[in-house]
Length: 199
Image: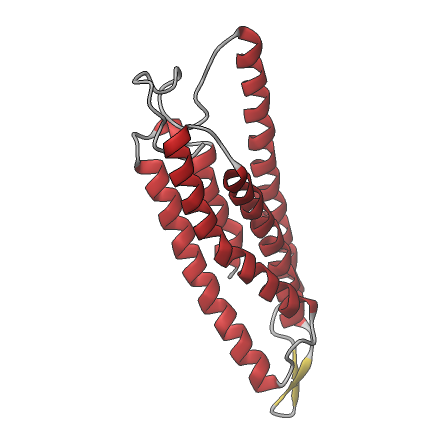
C-alpha cells in the first residue's frame, strides 16, 4: 500500500500534469490511465487484505485507519469514471468543465488522504497486541519515521510543481502567449480542433 500511495499515484498524476509535453500524444494519457489503474488494483488488493486481517483479529471499525481507508477507496473508485467523462467532454469542447475539476480535485484529495492513511496504517501495525498469547509490535518506529520523511518529500515536490506551473502560466499570460493547457506544442493545437488529451 505504501508503494501505491507514495510513488505510483503521484507518478501517474505527474505524467499528465508535468511531463505531458515531453512525450508525443497520446502517450501521457495512456501512461496516466495505466498507472492509476494499476495503483487502484494494488490498493484494492491491500484493502481486501486489511479487511481480512481485521476480521481475523475482530477489530473491524476500531481504528481511524480503517474508517478513512473505506472513504478513500470510495473516492478512488469514482476517479476513473470522472476522468473518462472529463476526457470525452474536453475532446468535444476543448475546455474544462465540472467533471474536469471534479476529477482533478478528487484525485488530489485521494492522493493526500492515501498518504496520510498510510502513516496511520503503519502506526496501527506498530501497536502492540496479543497474537497467539505473545505481545508483539509489527512495525518498528523507524519505518514510520522513514515513511513520514518520504511522504513529506513527495508532497512538497508535487505542491511545488503545481505552484511552479501556475506561476509559469501567469508569466505566459502576461507576455500574451496563448498555450493550450493540454499537452502538445507550445502553441497549442494548430489544427484548430480540440486537443484530444487531458486539460
